[in-house]
Amino acid sequence: MLKYLFTVLLTGSYLIGFAQQQPAFAEYNYNTILINPAHAGYYENSEVTIANLSSFSGIEGAPSTLNATLNLTLNNDNVGLGGGIMRDEIGVTSTNSAFIAYAYKLHFGVQARAPRFHNFNPNVLSFGIQAGVYNYTENLRELGITDDPNFQNNIQGTVPTLGLGVMYNRNQLYAGLSVPNVLGNSLATDKSIKINTIGYAYAGYRLYAGVFDEFEIKPNLLLRYTEGAPLNLDLNTIVNYKNKIEGGLGYRTSSAVNIFAGFYFFKSFRFIYNYSMPLQESPLPATHGLILSYRFGKGYNY
Image 1: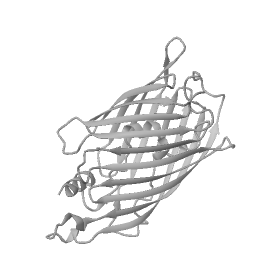
Image 2 (image 1 turned 30 degrees about the vertical axis):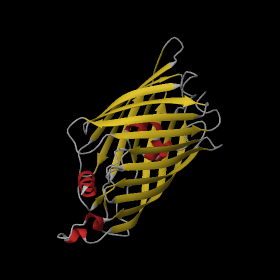
Image 3 (image 1 turned 90 degrees about the horizontal axis):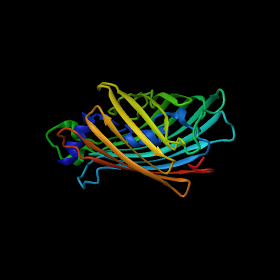
Image 4 (image 1 turned 135 degrees about the vertical axis):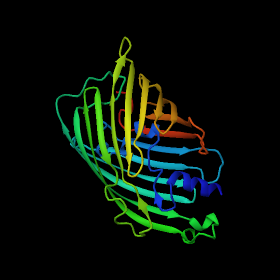
């Protein structure tokens, strides 16, 4: 019964999938390539990221997400590559997906001012495209609902995807727009699969403080549009100290608060913990997110 509850609550219907294909607070800030292919090759050195999001509640059918991405920087300054694999589980629904991303970057002017403690910050306009595939499974028969014909057959199919995005970074300002799947379910092998198109718009600003600019304060926002649903806004603020430790707070208009903290170690590793808590009475549990990244080359010390 719990599997049925989570399926209905988070998909809205047994025919609408991918409702959880929306990044958690921490993932948006630390793994932008998940939502925007234009972010491929943005950094000075390549980066690998593994992330997990779960309630860890032991409740059967509770949401769980696992993903791994590669953001690949090439010798060609104008080209970036990336890719990733993801697995989502919620109720009786599971999704396995993979994508590859390509970005072409136009550089203008010298690199933006950034204190030596903080991240590579090029002046760049980047255009991205990604191609991928979803393998979607909905085991409706596991629910044991015998008096409704809609639940008598499982749904399974493969859906090719095509995504587009653009990203702009100049001095201390950055912004991006993306639609990770412009095709929707038009090429789905099972016509029972319905996929809502999701679009993202995000922006942020970097402020430096302290005698040696050792603090970076980054207010940012993420606007998420899902076809057939209200707009969803994340408002976040991150504070970083010398690329050694950082933390932040966020508010999501779907009525949730996000808290996270992280630290950097061995020059090339970054670990982030994220806690998301519903503000209103909800049958959905709070979630915990874990993100581990490895940056090649100079790592996170510039």
